[in-house]
Every structure is written in structure tokens, then in C-alpha cells.
Length: 271
Image (tube, rainbow, N blue to C red):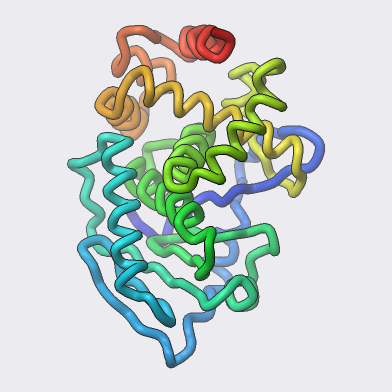
């Protein structure tokens, strides 16, 4: 897969409700990565290469290296993608703080990290692990799926998995998503036809949180009930160009299509 052709998908926000993704949809970070590459760190920074990353930071380089490799191992373990090996290390830039990150990347104030091409842009602070887990998941998902994987159609899986890994790495994030789920989804679930075909695009809060809370819950359910091996088979079939119904039927014995998955998930959350 050409890494410059596919970028990670950030937590894109939308205003009043979900709206369809247009055919020529281009995420904001893709425009930034292609048209205005981020500035790097100052000369007082350090670099280190590990098995899967080239990391640049001002301090704590060994700690970041260990944390990133641990997160990578967690993503592979949860998704079952052990056999997938990136052709080259991912580049990770850890800015000094949020101010430098926003100034040098041009990302909006709500952004805590960005994934594009084969690179992650993050900044030092207490939210590093959760942002790194989320954006690293996008890098791996996008590269694994390749050009046949229909990243647009499978956006809900991409984001649901990214949030799942984020919550696995940070208890505060897990608690926040669980509260949103109970408040916004539990008593008013979004139909899967809407969840799959509609996606957030504009900045908002409540509607965005609702979509992310649901896709997180659905992916978590798939992993808890079907396990990482079946999930990896599911992703593999999507990678080959199968529809979501076809991939489910191939990978799972309990769900032959999205309608059956939806029914099972609804029973699970209302048990």
C-alpha cells in the first residue's frame, strides 16, 4: 500500500446530526499532510528507532519508545493481526506541548493527535497514551486494509476500533465513553443503517459523542463475543473487498449479516 495515498482518520466532529460522506470526501488531516506538512521539532530534540517506530521527542525518548511498542503490541493482540508487518517503521513526533503541536501542525484546538501517511503527530502530556493508541490504530488499520479495504465504507469500524484501543489504554477515557454510552445510546440506539452509512464531518459535541459511543460499543461487543481471531478474519475479508455482510458470514458463526449483528448487540446492551 502506498502510505502517502492513505491517511489516518481523526475524530472528525459534526454539528447537528450525522450526514453522508460525499464521494470526494477528504479528511482535514489529509489536506494538511498533502498541502502543508507539519514542522518538525527544534534542534534540541532526540530520536530513537525501535522495531516499529522512529520516534522524535525533546525528552523521555526511551519511555516513549517503550510505551509505543507496548501500544503496538496491544493493538496486534486485540485485533489478531499478528501476521501483518508494516514494511517500514512508523514516524512518531512528540511535540513539547499542545501549543507547539497546534502551532506546527495547524490542527484545530480540539485535536489531541494526528495520523497521516505513515506518521503520528502527538504531544507530551497526560493524554499521550490515549491519543497515541487511537491514532496508531488508524495507521495500522489503514495500512492493513489497503486500497481494496474501502476505508470510507468501513469508517465506523476504523473509528470504533481506534476508540476501543484508546479506552484500553486509559481508564479515564474508558469511563468517559461508558458514561456517554449510558446517557446517549443505551435508551436510544442508532439504527445500524444510520451508523454505517452516515459519519461525522463538522464540529459539534453531543451528536459526535453519540456516534463514537455507539461504534465503540459495537466493536467492543464484536471483540468480546467473537474474539481477536474472528475479528482478524473479518478484517481480512473486508481487505479483500467483501461487503460487511459477506465478511461477517465468513468470519462468524453467530452473525451472517449486519442485521443479525445489530439484533445480537441490542440484546447484549439491554440484558
